[in-house]
Image (tube, rainbow, N blue to C red; front, side, top):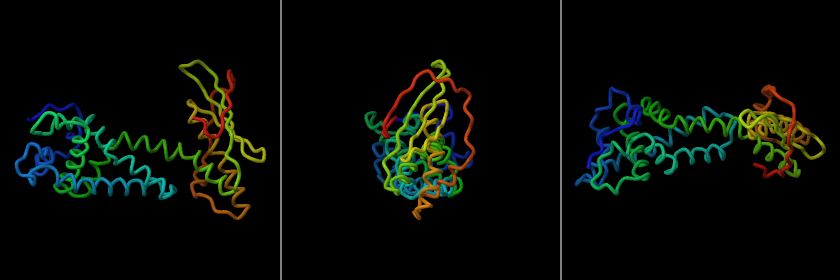
Amino acid sequence: MSRSRRRERSILDLIPTSIRDHPVVRQALVHKSASKDPLASNERLEFLGDAVIELVVSDYLYRRYPEVDEGRLTQVRSALVSRRSLGSLGVSGGLLEAITVGQADALGPAVAANAVEAVAGAVYLAGGFQLATAFILAVLGPSLERVDGDLVLGDYKSLLHQALAKLHHEPPRYRVSWSGPDHDRRYRVVVQLPGGFEAEGEGASRKEAEQEACRLAIIEANRRAEAAGLAVTGAASDARRPRRRAARSATQATESTSAGGR
Protein backbone atom coordinates (compact mmCIF):
# COMPACT_ATOMS: atom_id res chain seq x y z
CA MET A 1 0.00 0.00 0.00
CA SER A 2 1.53 3.30 -1.05
CA ARG A 3 0.97 6.51 0.83
CA SER A 4 2.48 9.22 -1.36
CA ARG A 5 0.94 12.38 0.13
CA ARG A 6 3.54 14.44 1.94
CA ARG A 7 3.40 17.42 4.23
CA GLU A 8 4.96 20.75 3.35
CA ARG A 9 8.68 20.81 4.12
CA SER A 10 8.82 17.12 4.96
CA ILE A 11 12.00 15.23 5.70
CA LEU A 12 12.16 14.20 2.05
CA ASP A 13 12.18 17.86 1.04
CA LEU A 14 15.47 18.17 2.93
CA ILE A 15 17.16 15.69 0.61
CA PRO A 16 19.31 17.51 -1.98
CA THR A 17 17.48 17.65 -5.30
CA SER A 18 20.48 16.17 -7.09
CA ILE A 19 19.95 12.79 -5.40
CA ARG A 20 16.24 12.90 -4.52
CA ASP A 21 15.34 10.42 -7.30
CA HIS A 22 18.33 8.16 -6.76
CA PRO A 23 17.35 4.45 -6.64
CA VAL A 24 18.84 4.00 -3.17
CA VAL A 25 16.73 6.90 -1.85
CA ARG A 26 13.60 5.28 -3.29
CA GLN A 27 14.60 2.00 -1.65
CA ALA A 28 14.82 3.75 1.71
CA LEU A 29 11.05 4.20 1.54
CA VAL A 30 10.22 0.53 0.99
CA HIS A 31 9.22 -1.28 4.18
CA LYS A 32 10.03 -4.96 4.47
CA SER A 33 6.31 -5.80 4.46
CA ALA A 34 6.07 -4.41 0.92
CA SER A 35 9.01 -6.35 -0.52
CA LYS A 36 9.27 -10.05 -1.27
CA ASP A 37 13.05 -9.72 -1.28
CA PRO A 38 14.40 -8.56 2.11
CA LEU A 39 17.46 -7.13 0.36
CA ALA A 40 15.20 -4.83 -1.66
CA SER A 41 13.66 -3.26 1.44
CA ASN A 42 15.10 -0.47 3.56
CA GLU A 43 16.46 -2.72 6.33
CA ARG A 44 20.10 -2.65 5.23
CA LEU A 45 19.91 1.11 4.71
CA GLU A 46 18.49 1.41 8.22
CA PHE A 47 21.53 -0.46 9.54
CA LEU A 48 23.89 1.90 7.72
CA GLY A 49 21.95 5.05 8.56
CA ASP A 50 21.96 4.26 12.26
CA ALA A 51 25.77 4.40 12.25
CA VAL A 52 25.93 7.51 10.05
CA ILE A 53 23.50 9.43 12.27
CA GLU A 54 25.45 8.53 15.39
CA LEU A 55 28.71 9.65 13.81
CA VAL A 56 27.26 12.95 12.56
CA VAL A 57 25.69 13.74 15.92
CA SER A 58 28.86 12.77 17.79
CA ASP A 59 30.96 15.00 15.55
CA TYR A 60 28.52 17.90 15.94
CA LEU A 61 28.38 17.68 19.73
CA TYR A 62 32.15 17.28 20.05
CA ARG A 63 32.86 20.40 18.00
CA ARG A 64 29.94 22.51 19.23
CA TYR A 65 30.52 21.97 22.96
CA PRO A 66 34.30 21.75 23.57
CA GLU A 67 33.96 22.24 27.33
CA VAL A 68 31.25 19.64 28.00
CA ASP A 69 32.52 16.35 29.38
CA GLU A 70 32.20 12.95 27.70
CA GLY A 71 29.54 11.64 30.05
CA ARG A 72 27.15 14.51 29.38
CA LEU A 73 27.81 14.41 25.63
CA THR A 74 26.99 10.69 25.62
CA GLN A 75 23.71 11.33 27.42
CA VAL A 76 22.69 14.02 24.97
CA ARG A 77 23.66 11.95 21.94
CA SER A 78 21.65 9.01 23.24
CA ALA A 79 18.60 11.23 23.61
CA LEU A 80 19.01 12.72 20.14
CA VAL A 81 19.35 9.40 18.31
CA SER A 82 16.93 7.38 20.43
CA ARG A 83 14.13 5.43 18.77
CA ARG A 84 11.60 7.71 20.41
CA SER A 85 13.29 10.86 19.14
CA LEU A 86 13.79 9.61 15.59
CA GLY A 87 10.27 8.18 15.51
CA SER A 88 8.80 11.51 16.50
CA LEU A 89 10.84 13.31 13.85
CA GLY A 90 9.84 10.76 11.24
CA VAL A 91 6.15 11.10 12.01
CA SER A 92 6.17 14.91 12.12
CA GLY A 93 8.34 14.95 8.99
CA GLY A 94 5.77 13.03 6.97
CA LEU A 95 7.68 9.78 6.42
CA LEU A 96 4.68 7.61 7.29
CA GLU A 97 2.86 9.30 4.43
CA ALA A 98 5.70 8.59 2.01
CA ILE A 99 6.78 5.05 2.86
CA THR A 100 5.44 2.04 1.00
CA VAL A 101 4.19 -0.74 3.25
CA GLY A 102 2.45 -4.04 2.66
CA GLN A 103 -0.11 -3.59 5.41
CA ALA A 104 -1.58 -0.52 7.05
CA ASP A 105 -0.96 -1.73 10.59
CA ALA A 106 2.79 -1.72 9.88
CA LEU A 107 2.76 2.07 10.16
CA GLY A 108 3.81 3.62 13.46
CA PRO A 109 6.59 5.51 15.25
CA ALA A 110 8.96 2.54 15.07
CA VAL A 111 8.60 2.38 11.30
CA ALA A 112 9.11 6.14 11.11
CA ALA A 113 12.33 5.86 13.15
CA ASN A 114 13.59 3.11 10.86
CA ALA A 115 12.73 5.24 7.82
CA VAL A 116 14.71 8.22 9.18
CA GLU A 117 17.74 5.97 9.55
CA ALA A 118 17.23 4.40 6.13
CA VAL A 119 16.91 7.74 4.37
CA ALA A 120 20.04 9.01 6.16
CA GLY A 121 21.90 5.92 4.99
CA ALA A 122 20.63 6.46 1.44
CA VAL A 123 21.73 10.10 1.38
CA TYR A 124 25.17 9.00 2.58
CA LEU A 125 25.47 6.40 -0.18
CA ALA A 126 24.12 8.63 -2.92
CA GLY A 127 25.71 11.93 -1.94
CA GLY A 128 28.59 11.25 0.41
CA PHE A 129 29.31 12.20 4.00
CA GLN A 130 29.13 15.97 3.53
CA LEU A 131 25.60 15.87 2.11
CA ALA A 132 24.56 13.30 4.70
CA THR A 133 25.84 15.56 7.48
CA ALA A 134 23.89 18.55 6.19
CA PHE A 135 20.76 16.43 5.79
CA ILE A 136 20.94 14.87 9.27
CA LEU A 137 21.61 18.18 11.01
CA ALA A 138 18.65 19.71 9.15
CA VAL A 139 16.37 16.86 10.22
CA LEU A 140 17.55 17.15 13.82
CA GLY A 141 17.38 20.97 13.80
CA PRO A 142 14.62 21.44 16.43
CA SER A 143 16.21 18.84 18.71
CA LEU A 144 19.62 20.49 18.40
CA GLU A 145 18.13 23.84 19.40
CA ARG A 146 16.83 22.26 22.59
CA VAL A 147 20.29 20.84 23.24
CA ASP A 148 21.69 24.38 23.14
CA GLY A 149 19.39 25.25 26.01
CA ASP A 150 20.41 22.18 27.99
CA LEU A 151 24.16 22.36 27.49
CA VAL A 152 24.85 26.08 27.16
CA LEU A 153 22.26 27.50 29.54
CA GLY A 154 20.77 24.60 31.45
CA ASP A 155 24.00 22.88 32.48
CA TYR A 156 25.20 25.47 35.00
CA LYS A 157 23.11 23.98 37.79
CA SER A 158 24.66 20.54 37.44
CA LEU A 159 28.13 22.06 37.10
CA LEU A 160 27.60 23.96 40.34
CA HIS A 161 26.50 20.84 42.19
CA GLN A 162 29.50 18.92 40.84
CA ALA A 163 31.92 21.64 41.97
CA LEU A 164 30.42 21.72 45.48
CA ALA A 165 30.57 17.94 45.70
CA LYS A 166 34.31 18.07 44.97
CA LEU A 167 34.64 20.39 47.96
CA HIS A 168 32.54 18.01 50.07
CA HIS A 169 29.97 20.75 50.67
CA GLU A 170 26.22 20.40 51.02
CA PRO A 171 24.13 21.20 47.90
CA PRO A 172 23.05 24.84 47.54
CA ARG A 173 19.61 26.16 48.40
CA TYR A 174 17.45 28.30 46.13
CA ARG A 175 15.19 31.21 46.95
CA VAL A 176 12.77 32.10 44.17
CA SER A 177 10.64 35.21 43.69
CA TRP A 178 8.77 36.73 40.79
CA SER A 179 7.13 39.94 39.68
CA GLY A 180 4.90 41.24 36.92
CA PRO A 181 1.68 39.94 35.32
CA ASP A 182 1.30 36.35 34.17
CA HIS A 183 1.92 37.22 30.53
CA ASP A 184 5.11 39.18 31.28
CA ARG A 185 6.51 37.66 34.46
CA ARG A 186 10.09 38.08 35.60
CA TYR A 187 11.81 35.63 37.93
CA ARG A 188 14.54 36.24 40.48
CA VAL A 189 16.54 33.38 41.97
CA VAL A 190 19.07 33.61 44.77
CA VAL A 191 21.32 30.58 45.15
CA GLN A 192 22.82 30.18 48.62
CA LEU A 193 26.16 28.39 48.90
CA PRO A 194 27.69 26.97 52.07
CA GLY A 195 29.61 29.62 53.94
CA GLY A 196 27.06 32.36 53.39
CA PHE A 197 27.87 33.23 49.76
CA GLU A 198 24.87 34.15 47.58
CA ALA A 199 24.48 34.72 43.85
CA GLU A 200 21.46 36.25 42.18
CA GLY A 201 20.01 35.75 38.71
CA GLU A 202 16.97 37.10 36.89
CA GLY A 203 15.17 36.02 33.73
CA ALA A 204 11.93 35.55 31.86
CA SER A 205 11.55 32.02 33.23
CA ARG A 206 12.44 30.32 36.47
CA LYS A 207 14.96 28.10 34.71
CA GLU A 208 16.67 31.05 33.05
CA ALA A 209 16.94 32.94 36.34
CA GLU A 210 18.14 29.83 38.19
CA GLN A 211 20.82 29.11 35.63
CA GLU A 212 22.02 32.70 35.66
CA ALA A 213 22.36 32.52 39.44
CA CYS A 214 24.22 29.22 39.13
CA ARG A 215 26.47 30.71 36.44
CA LEU A 216 27.64 33.34 38.90
CA ALA A 217 27.81 30.92 41.80
CA ILE A 218 29.96 28.44 39.88
CA ILE A 219 32.60 31.14 39.42
CA GLU A 220 32.85 31.39 43.20
CA ALA A 221 32.74 27.60 43.59
CA ASN A 222 35.54 27.28 41.04
CA ARG A 223 37.63 29.87 42.89
CA ARG A 224 37.21 27.95 46.14
CA ALA A 225 38.08 24.66 44.47
CA GLU A 226 41.24 26.13 42.95
CA ALA A 227 42.22 27.59 46.32
CA ALA A 228 41.82 24.12 47.82
CA GLY A 229 43.95 22.59 45.06
CA LEU A 230 41.07 20.70 43.50
CA ALA A 231 40.30 20.46 39.78
CA VAL A 232 36.82 21.35 38.61
CA THR A 233 35.13 21.29 35.23
CA GLY A 234 36.61 23.50 32.52
CA ALA A 235 33.13 24.81 31.74
CA ALA A 236 33.53 27.21 34.65
CA SER A 237 35.49 29.50 32.34
CA ASP A 238 32.44 29.75 30.07
CA ALA A 239 30.41 30.84 33.09
CA ARG A 240 32.44 34.02 33.23
CA ARG A 241 30.46 35.57 30.36
CA PRO A 242 28.81 38.90 31.35
CA ARG A 243 25.42 38.39 32.97
CA ARG A 244 22.32 39.88 31.42
CA ARG A 245 20.57 42.68 33.29
CA ALA A 246 16.98 42.02 34.32
CA ALA A 247 14.27 44.52 33.44
CA ARG A 248 12.38 44.50 36.71
CA SER A 249 13.27 44.37 40.39
CA ALA A 250 9.90 44.60 42.20
CA THR A 251 9.03 41.38 44.01
CA GLN A 252 5.46 40.20 44.50
CA ALA A 253 5.89 36.68 45.83
CA THR A 254 8.64 34.54 47.31
CA GLU A 255 9.11 30.81 47.37
CA SER A 256 11.83 28.71 49.00
CA THR A 257 12.90 25.36 47.69
CA SER A 258 15.61 22.83 48.38
CA ALA A 259 18.31 21.95 45.91
CA GLY A 260 15.89 19.67 44.13
CA GLY A 261 13.75 22.64 43.05
CA ARG A 262 12.20 22.73 39.64
